[in-house]
Image (cartoon, rainbow, N blue to C red; front, side, top):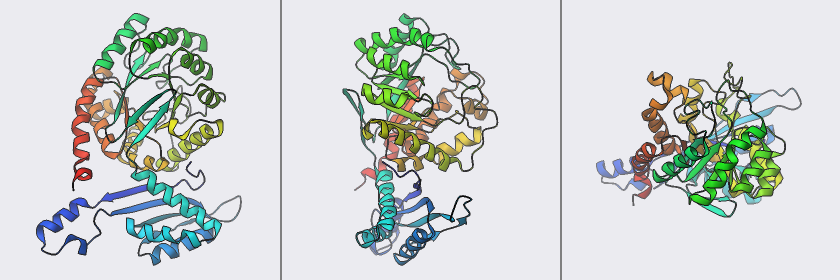
Length: 408
């Protein structure tokens, strides 16, 4: 499990294969004389180091041939803490890590977190545990089809409220290529009001029960309430998609663990009714990573297996247009946490503002663009309304992103 306090993030990892190929094309000398084959230039951020830890890490990274940026910030509660950024090639990081066997325990713990961060970021394949089911993702992404059985969801509220129409819609999503069907009975759009658990259960249980016996893909329950999660899993769901990241209902983590379901831990700033009222972050990606790590730790403490966790940065949940764009541009940082990354940009308001499209159902092309770029950054699950159209876009995006990985 990633270390919460250090909040390690690989903030950049540049693929040098195109550089190697160009050197090989334009020079007679072997490319290996210029750079190591397959190496990456990496920047890795760590937080809350002691001065001694930071000083030792800085000296050893410099000795390995890399570089370090180490601004110091004061701490009101005790000695100053240091946030640092390590910069170097993969081989330079390996030189740094090779010294861990002889390091003092405190320094070794930091190096272990560096190693974990680098290994996590490089990982491209996961087998997600969801009850008795397993879903393999990577390098090809999975698609989660959205099925809202609500009267007031921002895009399709009221369309699938009747159980029969909801089941027919799920059938269509599976035909279009959905790997998971995500059933939700409470709208969490900006400004929405909560519904009672009883009302939510009345909406979702008949649909979940029918789908679990009808379709051959996992059924997910989109809820922030432990009781709804428990009863939905009993009815046949095997994944709990919690917009509060296990930090809302205090019984949710236990509900996930005790039912054996998998879980999506999502980041949300505030709560749906007011989350879009001037959202602010001290450091967007660091804050989101810290929140998701906290949710992962809550899950682990409750007994949820590590391979049962998916993480989601929560596009549109307490974020401005600029925040959403920054998340998508820097999505790769979330790979450092060691869990498959889910992204849900489907038909959302930021796409409408960027493309000047008022009607959510007409934001399909913008959704496909966001999903394609998310896959290029490492997203392995896409939560969307328009499964067929996004599947087509992802087939192309995935093939392009695998060109350098598959090259000999």
